[in-house]
View: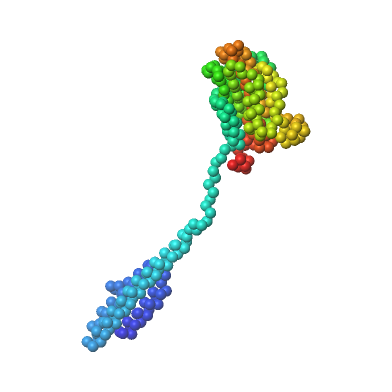
Length: 340
Ligand code: DAH
């Protein structure tokens, strides 16, 4: 019997050692030390022993039982520990790894340039006003001294919605809306989208942006216009910029002019940037036509004013050396990300 008990201890030790999952260990405990286990079976045969042998075998049986129970507990604890280690190893986080970069939005190049232009004009005391993109023929043309049969209408291929409603082809109608509502002194700029039925190419788009400027007060002269524009252009393109006023015609201003800056690339000698002209056209301007003032209920005998209109895309193209306007509208992030 003693031998059997020793043999049970050895088998239990070896099998427990080999076990690698908790279920197997529990099964071994039941097999050896359970109620119907091998130990119990042996103890049932104790009756056959002599009174001298009984306590000796009994003690050994208890030793074997506690050995098995201890070994089972130890093995279970070892396994639990090993599983925890494994889990910790698998779920390891390297907190020193660089995080994914969250892409941050930034201003569109047209917005950067527009904000700069607004700031310059606001600095000179101008207010910023808004006007509708869907406009009446009256505001876009008629009130601006461009009657129905005027040739100037042909140069602005208009998207008509009805006979007298259209998508504005210029920001100039805002002049009329402001003058109708506000008595002089007036000093405003109005940036916004304009629409013309133009075919898309490197310098044309059916949708582009203009910035309108209007000043009306007593004794406003062409000198005020020149001073304001020279200040504006030098702030925008640098103090060393050279500005030229060239006579032109617009129906809503008299006299009218176009303003050129000397090409900053070749300093007036002529190059690819200025198409060999030495000068780059920036904007149109002039003294508000007396008829336009009258149309808006402002007495041209008492008040005078100047107006100007510039194209935002052109200014931005020149500022950043962009030679294709379409890049501003494509929304290709490879282009846009260069303006972060
Ligand atoms: N509206 C003109 C255009 O689209 C630009 C312009 C020229 C606006 C002269 C003005 C101005 O206010 O005085 O071509």
